[in-house]
Image (cartoon, rainbow, N blue to C red; front, side, top):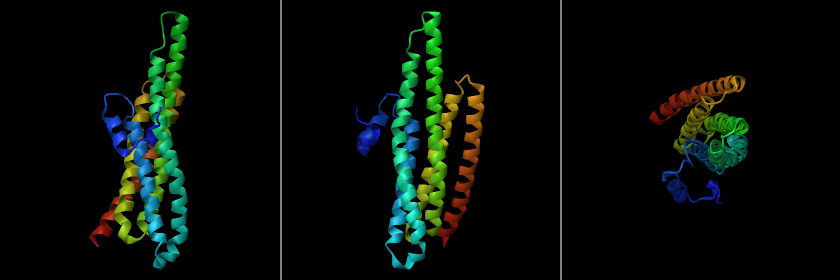
Length: 211
């Protein structure tokens, strides 16, 4: 089976539009992150090509390195999210005619739901890191690339918000209260930091664009 991150753009979009459950919103969140990371790397690369921004080259090199690593993480999460959902579906299809089968099925469903929550939680975590990189690209990149860096900011925020939705929907079905509370706490803390960064950048970007 071809991995989602190996499809052409058109084929991925077509897959997304089919009436199958995957790929879905979680994979789209991760793809947003990958696109945002790639845009950040592009801004850094373009800035490093110009001698007048030589004082920014060290920070741009850092963006290039971090964005490249994040891009690969996000691309892998595109597939992981789809796989995690399929594991939930497979668990739900397990037999439950006997008490033993019922217990086994319940354990499998709960384990798969935890995995389905952990994957978008990783996407949210990566989105928070991407926001920091995109902020740096906005503030220190070549001014001519500011709208590209701004797009990375928006993609980081979209990736994180969508991922948070997917964590929450899976947590709502998980019986392990300790796991639920810990994940919920992490989601809210990361989302608050992500939104704070986004709001700050919105003000900064709009002020820059107004001249």
